[in-house]
Length: 267
Ligand SMILES: Nc1ncnc2c1ncn2[C@@H]1O[C@H](COP(=O)(O)OP(=O)(O)O)[C@@H](O)[C@H]1O
Ligand SMILES: [Mg+2]
Image (cartoon, rainbow, N blue to C red; front, side, top):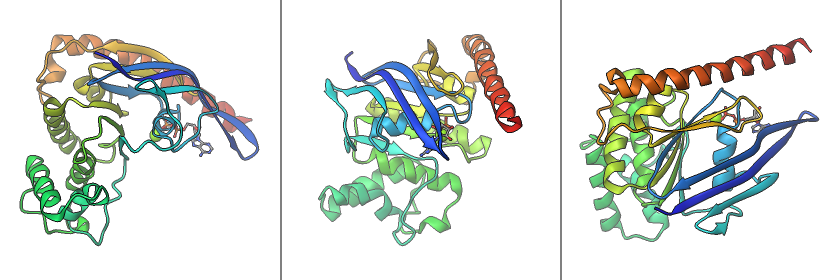
């Protein structure tokens, strides 16, 4: 395996209402090609900032991000990004939303529609090709959001709490679909979630971040065999053991984050 992404001493500060906010500090992380990495951490600890630095939407204050031995600067269009809320075009059909990234890459209509149909079918949305986004449920829209990124085959995919707003049952179905799609293509995925069960169920390695300023608290390999059954994984012994340990870590960080907020409110 070779390293696709190498993050060294990443540091990001924002100036917020005249005060310096350190969002990410001293963060080192190496990601191997084909890995599925999940990141958990308290709200506001710098998870989105980390992803935004990788994709180039945010300029780091310090440190380096190396992608295949090249230092990243500016927006990197080779990296796919799935945001938490779907930004589907309301005036385009599902088919044309999914095909859009191919359209901007100059792929002809027939070819891009064929590919889009294939992805739509794989996530169980056959029959909805000519619907518009407002006619779909949140879970259906989020599937479209994901396949719209997978369709142009980026080798690194960043996902920022993509299942965040969905109900528990829909989440599990989408986790299952995402894992199947990932098993076929084995692209590198960095997936942020606030749900520890989800983090463990999906990942090759789970990264726990500290409370802000966010850095790495721990990186844990998940040695549960694949393909995984996300519907049952929580009852496996191997799952429970790692869950209990990571939950303890996460709880400490969330608590620290809360204490800090209380202090800030009282100051
Ligand atoms: N553009 C910005 N300007 C000022 N502060 C920001 C900006 N983006 C993020 N922050 C601050 O940086 C910290 C980390 O934010 P974020 O990365 O969104 O956290 P997370 O995704 O883990 O919830 C927060 O304190 C947030 O308020
Ligand atoms: Mg975030």
